[in-house]
Length: 268
Image (cartoon, rainbow, N blue to C red; front, side, top):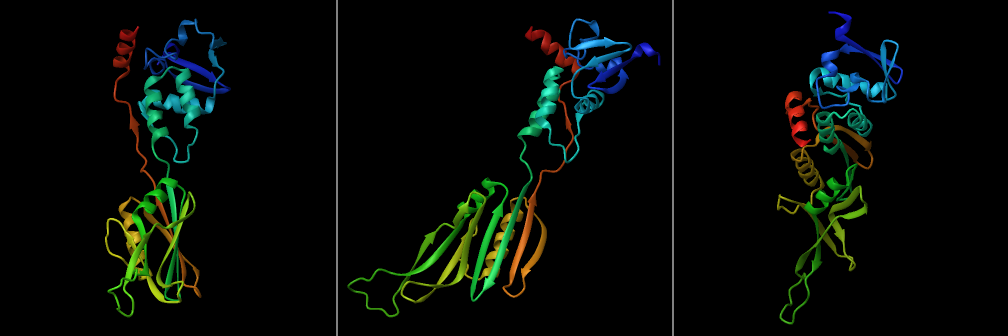
């Protein structure tokens, strides 16, 4: 391979050497046009072309030019800055792929705190994504036993009970709380508090059954049980941690550089 087939770039102090054919992969891009010497952003300094841009991010751009794929580290977070660099180099295909990354949902974390005490089971659900909490709030209904309104013809004892539906409490956008089991009314009568979680229509008063149903719902929603731990053995307090994350995928451009160039010419 002759030296005329190679080009050396100094991008923000980082040196990259690659084939000329790699730089010219996208004829309509600013990178492909940099060799004509008309763009003031690309200056020839000795045998290198100097570009006053981010050299670390350019390594991902060069990898994209070589493979036509966007594969980033799992802990990568500079999507907007990388997109800004792709816009500078006028790499429309890379901009489109980054849009897919930026718009995809971030990993969601959720914890279920379960406390079983004195014939009552208390639940607190905390989630990093408020939309998940909103979804659960719409599915969970708490039913409270209340004496039915007396009628002139009703002399039954004990009085008949009706179920009053209530939503779970929302202390904040990121959590909800509710409980089931024995429930004391204002008249010191012992009632029962039930919980129903859609699409299951059962009204459950046993905390262990409600916990099992809640976990089953979360698993069906794409969450994975990450860990369980006992917070307090005396109070029978437990914590279940869940995570929902989209699997890593390699994003590949749909159109070829040649087709992209033809489309760019038609627009002009």
